[in-house]
Image (tube, rainbow, N blue to C red; front, side, top):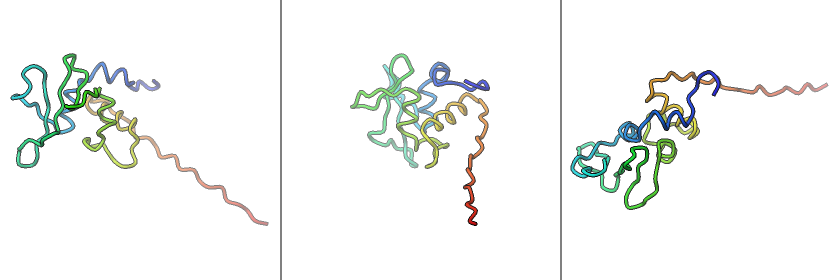
Length: 126
């Protein structure tokens, strides 16, 4: 890409799904993750939220939420659960959110885009 920006392939190679899960507020569940790492969310009291669990696949690049077998990689997880990330706002597109989250986790500075406001043409009446 232009100006040395990172692509989705760079994000997939450099980041791990476990980093994304921890950034989204999940904690490693040591009791359950003997064979494959599993991540759970806890409430403000520290108790586990039932049904909010992700299991990481053996290659460490994908995860799924049991009992469904839909695999999420880094990009699809951020797009499917945007509300779990600090950069989420209503006006941010999913692709922009992926760029913001992944660049922050890779400590890559990202330049703010200038707003493109088009001035309306004024009609001159005779």
